[in-house]
Amino acid sequence: MATQPEPPFVHGRAPRCAVLLCNLGTPEAPSAAALRRYLAEFLSDPRVVEIPRLLWWPILHGIILPFRPAKSAAKYARIWGPQGSPLKVWSQTQATLLHGYLGERGHQVQVRYAMRYGQPSIASVLDELKAQGVTRVLIVPAYPQYSGSTSASVFDAVARWGLQIRHLPELRFINRYHDDPGYIAALAKKVRAHWLQHGPGELLLMSFHGVPRRTLELGDPYHCECLKTARLLAEKLGLPPDRYQVTFQSRFGRAEWLQPYTEPTLVALAQRGVKKVDLVCPGFICDCLETLEEIKLEARATFLQAGGEQFHYIDCLNDSPDWLRALTDLCERHLQGWPTRQADDPMELQASRQRALALGAPD
Image (tube, rainbow, N blue to C red; front, top):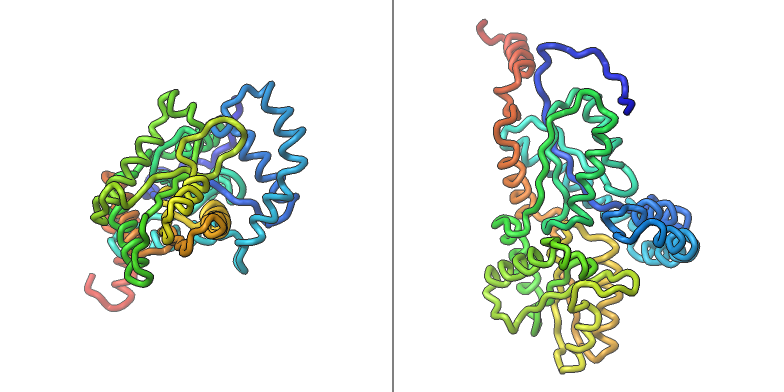
């Protein structure tokens, strides 16, 4: 196993810490070519598609990649903004704001974002952090609910990067925060703010990203953690069981996925006489294709065509101050014991002293 050459080790260098916020990923453009590259990487991950490669490869390369990219590109084009992909814009925004929130609390840490699939890749950002002298990295997956297909895949990418590194930084990894009080409170405040403006619907639908049902049978905790998030959010909002429902979206392929499915549920609700529905996606901390196109556009159209009258999508947490404070709290807890405070950095202390002397402070 070959590792990358390392620069000479510098003794006495102050340790530097970083937080790396890792999201799923996005194509570089809403084009068939960009989607082909993105889907090839995404659907080649054995964590995402747990089918033997011998069976999956002909399907992926013979059926999916030749035809699906153009259809997916058209969907991305519907939500693409002047700054690019919403998921990338919000991920970058969250990283920037998190850096500010941590800095206000006295933490000297770098905060960066990376994508599990697409750019900037996890490996490339870790390379940059290491080149800048970072010796400790907290990995924060953008998935509140743990799943092997998401959170564990981020760990895989970090581990593969580590195989090429001789002098590894110290690493910490946040597995989940599906029941974090700050996260739940931030979700509840988002919903209440929507109700204050539009009034509550007859039912609050909580739609989570779907995964194959087989993963539940194999011991993946994702389904249980989604249900716990939903229960805690409902309790925070004071909703009785008949005022909310959990569903799962984004099915792919013919296998059974976690149920009930979101769009068929909306059809059934409309046919039952429910006229006004609110929908929130607690499993996504950033708005993206799955929330803006699949839910805000397609699911809304499905509900209205089935006889519903009002469909309100409640935005993801995005740049919510309550969410950023909760994320800062989460990072602070996991950064404990690392030298992140300004007073812990001898180089910064020396620089501060020199600046003070330059301003006329007594020696």
